Structures are given as structure tokens and as C-alpha cells.
Length: 168
Image (cartoon, rainbow, N blue to C red):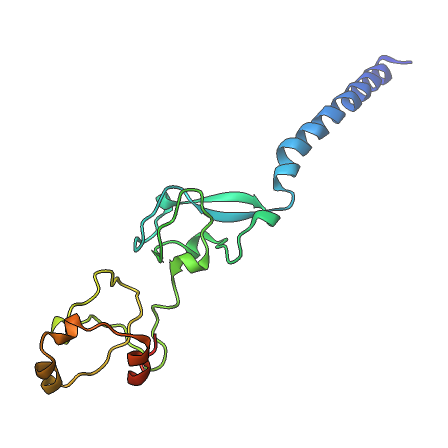
């Protein structure tokens, strides 16, 4: 056997001996973490309600498909600069329901507009926030003068709301 064949023989034997551990390392570090996973967006830190999301608030993480939350956002641009509909905890998967995306767009016979203070009759709720849905009832000025302060003291019951035909 010549030196060239002997050298090639040893290279082949060493290569075969090292290929097993190399395949095992490649499987453990590259293939297995990506097998059956999906990139999903999670909150990098806690985010309060009504905050517009930035890149600092979000992170891309690989999650196994069986741990994927229904409606999870998988593309970062679709979540950036969106307003949150509720408080989001750290490492929580971002879903469409957490973002104010479509419901702020007015449907037919709906409008997005500021609520003038002269329209408020009685005491408005303290928890009325941007993005909340409300129904407005027109009240004539004469009716408002007659009612006076009694409206702030009245409590609406289900029967009264049914009489007024107000959705609740």
C-alpha cells in the first residue's frame, strides 16, 4: 500500500469516527430546536393598556406548534405601532385580540370622533377610555333642563333599558 492510499485510508477512518458526534451535535443544536416550531411574537416586558407597541416591547421566539396560542401574531410588522387593548404581561404571546386593529375602523353608521363635553349629560363613567364602544342617546335641551340633577341619581335597570331600546 502506498503512502497516498494509506493517508487517504486514515483520513476516511477519522472522518467516519468524527461524523457520528458531528451529526449528533448538529441534530441537537440545529435541527431539533427548529423541528416543529413556529416563530411567534412575545412581549419582552410588561406593556400597559393603550400603549403603542415598539420593537423594544416585542421579541421573536420559537415556540412548539402545540404551545401556539390561537390567533397569535407571527409577523413583527403587523404588531408594531399597534395600540394594546389590554395590559400584556412579559413573555405572553401577542394575539390579534390584544391589539386595537380593526375595531377602531368605523363600520357603516359608526364614527370615530371626540366626545364634546357639552354632550355629556350627568356624570360620565370614570373608566371611559379610547377605543371603548359607547351608544349615544339624543336628549333635547328642554328634556335636559326638566331632568336637572335627577339623572345623576337615577339608576338604570334592565327594564328601563329595554323600554328605551338601548343596546347593552
